[in-house]
Length: 279
Image 1 (cartoon, rainbow, N blue to C red):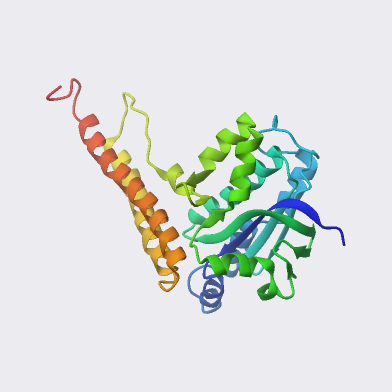
Image 2: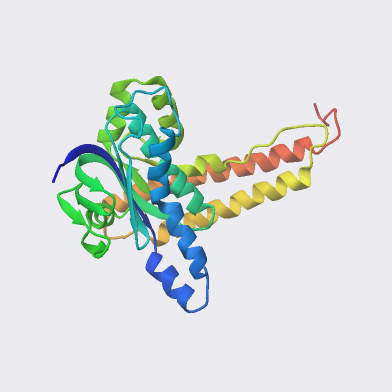
């Protein structure tokens, strides 16, 4: 069994078993919607895209193979993505994970997981290694992913220092720039952070609609507050490291909520007839 040095993303839908149980009871997501959630987490379609079209982003970044040796395995509410070690591979893997997290987030579903670098055998449904463990679609609880994500206890997708350091040391301009957009670092920990993309923005035009802008901003505020309450509910209070990392995550949410408040103030100014009163 050939083991390769690869970048790996372990992704899990938080509370997936509960979502399935509720669906079977006729509540929450339908069975078809559950299937969509799993597909958003990762599917063979992702691998086929790279096989056919090559990198999704940063096409000028260095790669070893055009298809990035990209593999995806998905089962029972979690997925494993892996790709070659190259700047193009690293940033495309991170982007795939970011996209999955964001798409699920927009449906009110949280993910947790880990992006790292390790020796792994990954070919279709066959996965071994990653953290010295094994994964099988027939036995997901024995998988490498479960140990990686659960022991960290984080309500988001963490990015290993090995991945951050690789991007920085390679110095690929495109990969560095995209990485800074997709990953937030606090000097100690790093994680996929789709929240910053939800900060409300709008163009000021002659037909500016203050009511519409305010409603959109309020929708963002509700999303952020929901994420805040969800993040709190998935943290093990007996795990100091998980509590610290969750506090960083919550602080980032609070920063975005502050932007929502500032946006409300700006809308209040923009809705006044030009020239603005007091200007």
